[in-house]
Image 1: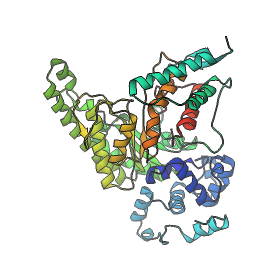
Image 2: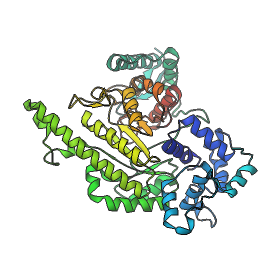
Image 3: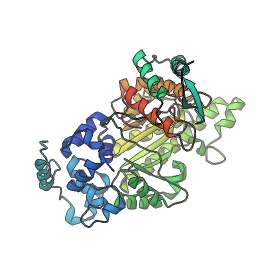
Image 4: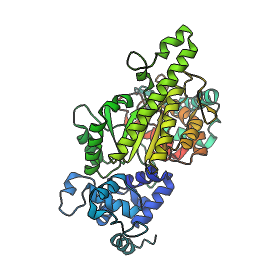
Length: 121
Length: 342
């Protein structure tokens, strides 16, 4: 999580994607190069920008930084990937049920962020 | 005699070897794999690259930037801290994945405390961003007397009571399969990202069959569940000898066949294991392990994460594998086999 390993891992775990495909998918969604995925300096900023969580307790003490569940809601949308605990959390909170508006699972906010970064998919 | 480099034996002790000695060990390691596992040898370029990795004088080595792989794991726990603290520590130090485990690491033991484990998983999911899976092993021996309900096949076999020993293993496998499915469904309900069936086949072919059947049922019940199937060793022991999975005999299966069966069952990640010979050098062990696992990469449609923990796949059999050895083992697997993770 200091870089993007947790995101690549999620694609391997849930989609069974091979490494090369998973890294390319994540890089595309984040609007960075594959090499950037393992650059801790770049990824600290990128993770904060997308609200997908950063690595240390110290950084998460900053108000406004995504907490774990917030980060996972954002990861699910960003990667268009089901995350079990996110789906169950949503089911337990009636006002969140059906909140996943866009058909492709990507919110307008996430799409806007991606477009700002030049991501086309 | 050429200059010597410090390398390691399979138990982690330091040893000095020349480049020629390392080359000989790599050749012998590959030859041992070819003879035992009936696999093709590494080609000349692969063997030469392995030699360069092990003959380098640097303390540590690594892959090129951009070639990094993800790291999976089998258990994120310590006896000196709470399990939730261990999971958050795993996230803080940069792990890509962590695993909630019960210290006994046996699904038979877990089944008596499932509600507690579910609540802990739910709490872990609320606290962590990285994926959290649940893991244990089938541990088929626990189902035999005096610990379990089935006759003890390890006592029946030496007495020549083969049919009874086989029936006992089949009964134990059925019990184990039910436990693993029940626990898997319960942990999915609690929000787990996936299940890890670790050390599969430790008690032989019946153990492996129980895992394959559990994986198939969980895949059907929970299509989005990550299912990691890690092996106990390079070769499935024929403790039963006649068990099959969809027409394939399980006894004697090597990693490529194990992977094929895991894929058929519905696993998402496969973890081959090759045992370390502590009396041989790490170079010998890695050469042998890579040659044995290489056929996996030709048939893999799912990620392959070789079990590169202590005493497996060339990693020294020591609680703290020295970084000069661990970095060389990791680099060799990534650059020669193009594995998807470790």
